[in-house]
Length: 253
Image (cartoon, rainbow, N blue to C red; front, side, top):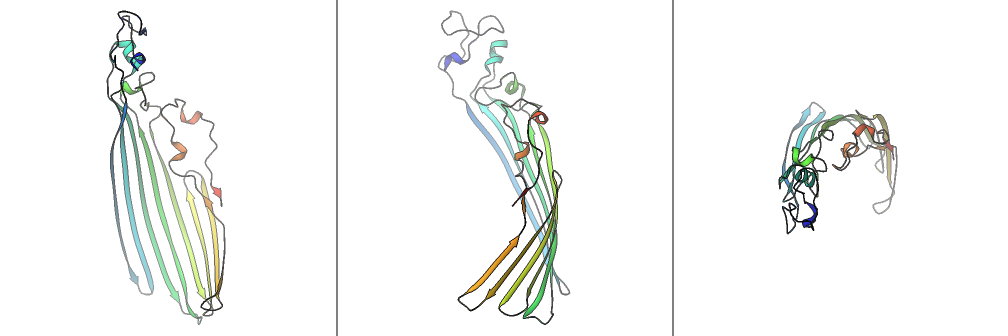
């Protein structure tokens, strides 16, 4: 609407649509749009094989996604009132997310006289997630910023990361042809909330080709999704540490 951005001839004083001599830069109004430029890429590599009776599978992945955010065909009302000038396009800031993962998996078999050899698998994983918020240009953060979508202030900007290490051991056995047993233990450590050990056991008995019973018992937890703990909208101008958020912790399942 044209009355959203009006200035009087006096700097710093808002104008009125019905007062003569007021500065009305957009008599027909304007329609702000959001623009995004995204760059996304990922690389994956690995190798697998065997050393004697031990099979191995090694792999790593790195990916990164960067989004540059713009507000187009807009205006900064306060900037126009204070200076009689406003840009039409604003750079609001950026979101950058990356993840690095490395996995190592090993397995081997032992013939203990059961229906099938005992299978032992073990391995580990390392993962690092990083999330960054970049601040916008001066026009996008002056007072209320560009209309429809303000920029990210330097107090909003920052880089945050989470590291996760895990180890696991899995043992599968079949004492008789109809019975299959599997047990596993996994250790997880997160840099932002601590460690957890989880267990899982499962069994299956085939009474016939048409009927079988299967059961599983396990513990577990769910880490808070990343980067939800550190994202907040640009309209929230409180410092991140002052928000009344509960400390990050694992959630049992």
